[in-house]
Length: 147
Image (tube, rainbow, N blue to C red; front, side, top):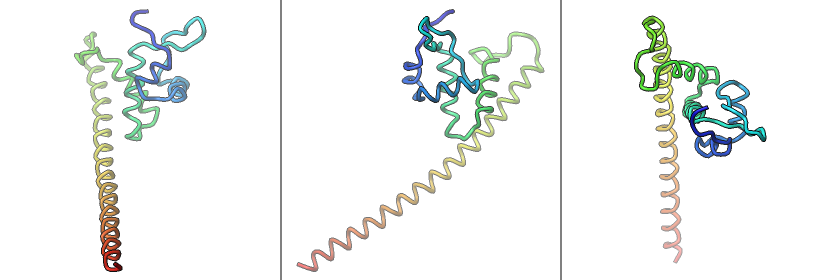
């Protein structure tokens, strides 16, 4: 096996995912350890770390685990540079591109929804700041008047 192998703790640090989440992703087929050490520890390659990092980036968008696996499976069928598939099956290439485009459109729409929700949350936080500032100003004026 080529490449450096990492134990689950290092993978957790690199991806920001908990050990429990990584184990769950293994259970549901998002990622599998490349090997196990002689002591039975899970060992992951850089490719496994990339799979987990992508799954982590999809989480805030609300994609289900089936979607995560599907996107990862599509991406793994393309060469690393994004060039066409090595075989001359143009139809298979176009189908993969279409599947990836579908997920891109959905991700883009979900990002737009998150931006709208964030703007609403920021507006709320700003209004609380305004209320607090007015109360503090009123309290300051009241204390000066009481002197």
